[in-house]
Image (cartoon, rainbow, N blue to C red):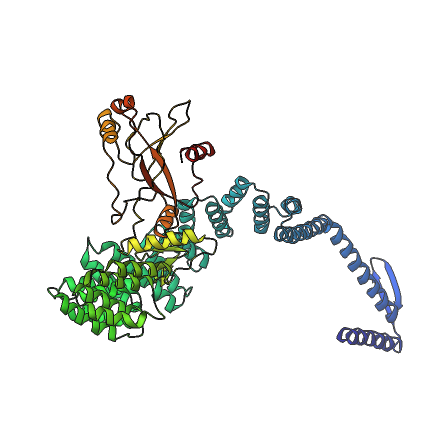
Length: 589
């Protein structure tokens, strides 16, 4: 609109000027070099204007002709750039969609149109990765390191390639170089921190954490928690070799994270070893109120050297009073009471847990009380049987792994501060036998005595002549079967631990073997978890075989010795003897 008004204004001015000249006629005479030119003023002005216009037109034409090659080149460049940008855009879309063919096609087109563009290098590298050409991708990323504009992009690409191929050391070097190049980037700082934690490089991880905190890449609370875990890891490693530094690290970790159990336990033990009982007590009490744990109870009980078991019981009672609603408080009191031989106090401490909060530890402690106070084996077996089906106790758990001791990183993923004190979750794909075996193994780890299987009882059978068989010493609960006489198909079985000799065979044929005492149990060592579950749950089947070894003396007279019957446990998944030997056993019976 403004341009229109300006154009109209210029037209009006020119028309007004021409009208003004037309109203004032006059003559203009030019005498130059013998030439006499006479004309009016109006015509002279019009001719001058036309002459100026022709000059400008000629100048513009000459200038365009002179700059036409550059204009043509600029036009071609603009068209090439447009094609390259379109190829880059389409190639990135193809990369995101996972179309390898289109991504490769657009990468080639972008390289032809924009060979020096950083995005072209990125598109080519990602297209090579999508096609599985790792060598080409690494070569492109390495070429990016030569330019300051693409160095960071090349380092990230090389880091990701090294991480995919499992080259941890190379990935760590690329991350360190990226951090030195630009510490404000979050990905190299996080990657370097994770790698240092996996390698147990606690000092390096602390430096990287300080860089992240300085650049605002992590919140203060999270940074304090991570620093506390790293300091605790250093203190745990140096507790035996360098207690001075371990104590300093543990106390700093406790100040940063008062609910971190390992830091408080290490600090309590080291302070107690120095005789600084009041400070050790204060540290443990602070953490106990936030996160009760058996290690804290143990460190608190032995915080003062030279205390008697009764004194330790009194100390633990005071500690339990600080957090009376926790499961660890009555258990800690019961453990200290058992050590002090005060079984009534132990029963009283565990009594509130016997109804709705019964766990495996509680059951094993009750079994220990029954065994040490009254020597009642029946009650001991009863509590151990209840422990099999009782709720599991909390343990250090990280990514499905249960550990007896705390660790700063997960053994599966290497993540920092992954272990938590909680009840392990049993997977639903386990069978009942596997769960039973696992629980029995946990009871053995807690110090419980597993229930022994029933004793072998002689079973009377009809004697039958059996060919002599060779025997050899074997492990407990193993049965050696011999093919025997090929004509009769008889088998001979030797008990575990027996040795074959002519003298032993003669003695066994002349005397009746002693009967097995039912009050004694067979010492059977299960070979696997399922066998253990079968023995302890009394679900094993019984396999009965007979064995006779006639001697030279009584074979001539036709005397026959009493058969020896052996009963051995068999797991539920044991298929038993082959069909031909089952038929032989039926014929013998």
